[in-house]
Amino acid sequence: MKRLLITGAAGNLGKLARARLGHMAEVIRLSDIADMDPAGENEEVIPCNLGDEAAVHDLVKGCDGILHLGGVSVERPWDMIQRGNITGVYNLYEAARAHGMPRIFFATSNHTIGYYRQDEMIDTRDPMKPDGLYGVSKCFGEAMASMYHSKFGQETALIRIGSCFEKPRDRRMLATWLSPDDFISLVECVFRVPMLGCPVIWGVSDNDEGWWDRSSAKLIGWRARDNSEAYRAEIEAAAPCPPPDAPQSVYQGGMFTEEPIHKT
Ligand code: NAI
Ligand code: 15L
Image (cartoon, rainbow, N blue to C red; front, side, top):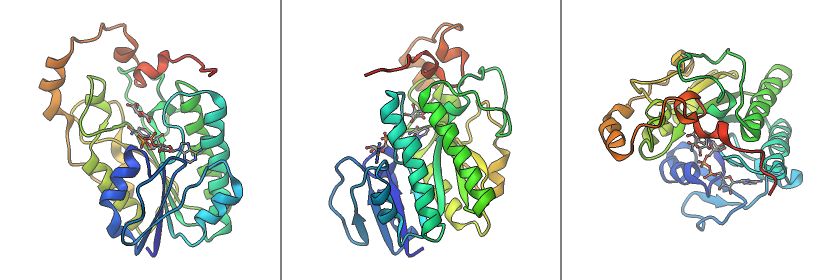
């Protein structure tokens, strides 16, 4: 690629992508609403609120790939979610349509299906069961990507990320963990596969424990390599097992199912 745009570049995954994906394009364009480190070699830093339509059009112009990580990433009041994840996603897709339809990696979430129980095995065709406003906004993003693909041929990888951190932080994450290395190889596959379409793919490592049928990863030739099992002893020693009827033991979305509708 000549220019890869990374939204959410000041966030956790954005910093990881910035550090490790410089080889993916001649220029990496980094954007966020929050402060970012100054541009290094082969980088451009462009602050932008995804809710600002004109600014998003300027941001997307000239890019041939978009790693879309920007937006609200946890349960928050509706106005914040609406700006980043609803209006922001509309702005992004309209800007992509106006500027050559660059391929999009869309960071969606397991919170689109958070109310499935942990004793259910599901695949990407099962109906959504979001566990909060944040999850609903990611369902919207998936629907938006699907519509732009059907109507205009816009390609998007809808990556339903489980929990992408250096290592799993609790027992639930033994099932939902996506390692940083697997995240990076997943992004590489999305931008390298010749034909993408608009598949939904679980962004999860090759964990022994899990609730998601990972077969759609084959569509893009991606194979996760890491396994949370390496951390099981550490996790189990660190904290007592939550009771079997606690939300983090019952639902795939864990504690997100307990979040209220935030007003402030
Ligand atoms: P993060 O919260 O660290 O980063 C998101 C970034 O988006 C932040 O730097 C924030 O300033 C920016 N942002 C928020 N509202 C914005 C707006 N209106 N305009 C422009 N930028 C805005 O989140 P993280 O962990 O880096 O996640 C990246 C993406 O992956 C998010 O979309 C999140 O929903 C998704 N995801 C992450 C998971 C994880 O385990 N880290 C799991 C599932 C999904
Ligand atoms: C998400 O969607 C969040 O962005 C992230 O912060 C984690 O909480 C993750 O899901 C998870 O479910 O562990």
